[in-house]
Amino acid sequence: MAAPSYGLIATFETAPEIYHAAEQVRDAGYKNWDVIAPCPLHGLDKAMGLKRSIVPRISLAGGLTGFCTGMSLIWWTGASDYKLIVGGKPLFSPMFAFPVSYELTILFTAFATIIGMFVVNGLPRHYHPVLKYDQIKRGMDDAFFIVIEARDPRFNLANTTALLAKAGGKSIKELEA
Image (cartoon, rainbow, N blue to C red; front, top):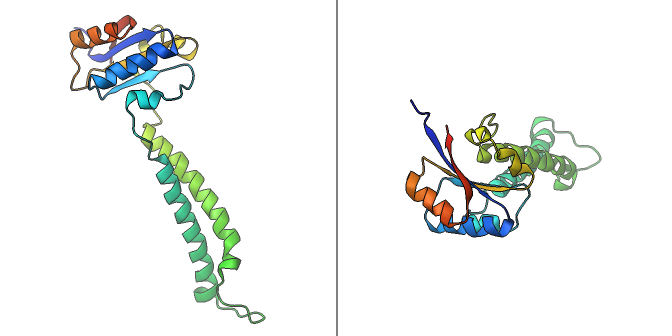
């Protein structure tokens, strides 16, 4: 019995090739696919049709939460829980609360960014079917790959293989799950 298919992988040798291939896959309407590259490629996310990440919004929410937590903490301790008037100072002043709020803003932003990145990227993932491909190490050195998953609604083994070949893909292989 054959192992279930994860999808197809195709090798590309240069960055311009992978850009044009990504545009062709995007224009063909595929949704569940990815590019593996040995280095960051400026503009590849646009060629793939990816939207902007939500991680910056998660970071902003974490920072605002930290700032409000700091201000609330100082207000609660000074004006509500332990009212202590010293030298005519007010029970609460944002000026006194700023150092605590500033530090909590940085701390909460860092935690929100890390947690947001892990959640959005689906980490930690200790195994991926692409790692079974015998040439995958080249993806960290000198080759580029496009992986189209079999769960994509437009995936058809023959048509997808033809698309990758037309896009310039070499060594098109089926990956087992």
